[in-house]
Amino acid sequence: MRVLELASEAVPFAKTGGLADVAGALPEALARLGCQATLVIPAYREALASGLPIESAEMAFEVPIGTRRPVARILRCTPPGGRVDVILIANDDLFDRPTLYGGARDYPDNAERYIFFSRAALEWASRQQRPFDLVHCHDWQTGLVPAYQKLLHASSPALAGARTVMTIHNMAYQGLFWHWDMLLTGLDWKYFNWQQMEFYNQLNLLKTGLVFADAISTVSPTYAREIQRAPGGCGLEGVLAARSDVLSGIVNGIDTETWNPASDRHIPRHYGEQDFDDGKYAARVALAARLGHAAPDARPLVAFVGRLVGQKGVELIIEVLGRMAGAGRAHFMILGSGEAAYEQELQRLAASFPGTVDVVIGYDEGLAHLVQAAADITLVPSLFEPCGLTQLYAQRYGSIPLVRATGGLVDTVVDTTPETLHDASASGFVFEGFAASALEHALERALALHANRPAWQGLVRHVMRLDCSWAASARDYLRLFERTLAAPPAPVV
Ligand code: ADP
Image 1 (cartoon, rainbow, N blue to C red):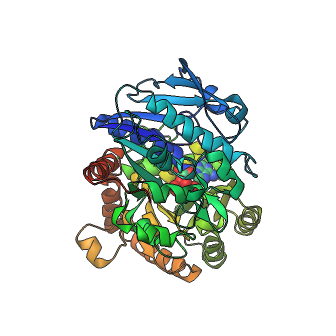
Image 2 (tube, rainbow, N blue to C red):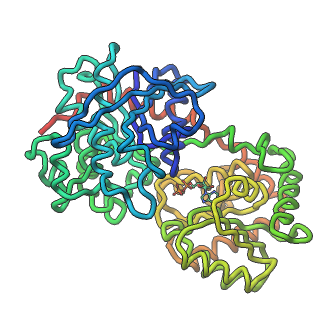
């Protein structure tokens, strides 16, 4: 199968979030399953400065964007050790910038930038000799691609027979722009209606993708259900419910080489299921030194690693710390950065409970690995979570995730009960309501089990064995692609 993957960021070229991990890893995993995968991304400054062997493909063409015709230069690269051809769409006016999307404020021309990228990517594809079977788009930045494939490339030999799949990584980001940006798309105004490209008088690029794609996926089965109703659908629940027959969820894999306690360069002693106690102890010694403590703490270590934003349930953690830290039954470690109010409140708690609450504000990849290796319990009390990676990293490092029952957390963590312990399906602790009391109750359950060493050790060994590699997810994507190819294309109304 010949698959074209289109994304606005991908490791190792450019990254702001989890999308880059997926767009980097999935094409490689598909290639290992026998697909011929090509990935197309913008040639950002960050990508060009990455040191990767990027070359000119000796191809350039104009792309009509409203009344302008900016030039797309085509670059190509196969990362060392990789099997996937990566095509980079270059235009220095649009992509040679300090950040990908503009930082605190989006770049004012983001509509133009990603309309250009989407149109140029398909133009490049249409010039290829061998036809593509499947075009796989990620998030709003490529939302126009399914429409372009159907409306502009209906007679391109390389694209006419292809099917399109639109994957949603987070419904909270839809690519909403003022209605006049419709002129930039080059598509007929007749498509600017409430059933296709319009959303309350604005142009909605994600909605466009959801309407025109032959199939839709998102990053977990539970999130696929949640987005078909409010508030999960963020206003597009009706559009998604109307397409429920072609909507499915596939949990992301993780990079099992980078996140591997048996070879991780960020931890002092490598470990596996058999010797995790030793490995975790060594990690705690290193963590204590890093935090300026004389000796590692003997109490269970409860950790949080993530963005300090409302989505992640930080307010619940703050409330629970206020209630539980005084009792001193556990040691808490928070690593994150985000909203100033959360950062300040957490630092205040650290000052109030020295030695019991440690808070490191900042983004530190190496420390994140060390914390997961040292931790016994990792908190993921999210308000919503399309897939979530932290709980998967925690499991691999033998830290038991304690999560709220939402999105991908439901699909990857089985609550520990006498029954699930007995049938060996338990893989963490789960609580339902978005309330500090619910988190606290789950944490009490976890700490009680931690005191029962044989039971805890059995649980740790089990979660460390779980398969969360990309190979399993890529197999599911391949099945989705095969299903989509076997079905007729979505009609254009
Ligand atoms: P999201 O993509 O919504 O932030 P995920 O759980 O899918 O949440 O992925 C978050 C990733 O970012 C994890 O790999 C986590 O370890 C990492 N991360 C988040 N904040 C930090 C931080 N302050 N330092 C190091 N790693 C972090």
